[in-house]
Length: 178
Image 1 (cartoon, rainbow, N blue to C red):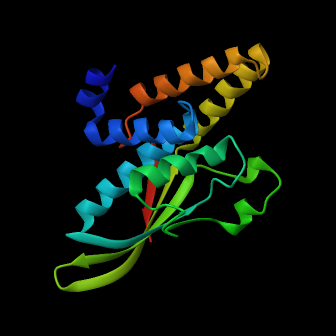
Image 2 (spheres, rainbow, N blue to C red; image 1 turned 90 degrees about the vertical axis):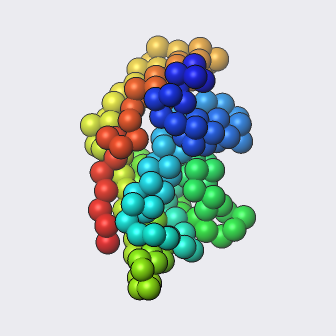
């Protein structure tokens, strides 16, 4: 799988997803998507200007699993970690008691250095709605079929690996420069 994945998505994505899943404790759907998003956002920023500095990430994934697992992927792939104070959770999502309020979305704030000009900018990135629906349906089916048994976690692993292999980071997200 390693050679095929690296050939298709590159060493940077391979490394980010593997490290994310190491700290996360298992191969997860949302953590893998977080790693893909972070890599994609950094690629977009590098195309935008010759340098992006002081990256800060605002996540809308909340602090309750399963969607909050997305935050682990964002941290590893961008280096914007809690320890550096460079990632934060949107207050509405962090304070919510309902995980349904969380979403796979982040705003990447940065200083763009374009030639001699420095601009404060932000890039909003979110997972396409149809893919969110697919994940929700697949997870609901897994819960219905297995409950929260070890077989459920095996199915989550299979789904995460399938999404990782099949979903191109350049095609699964919507973006908006703000």
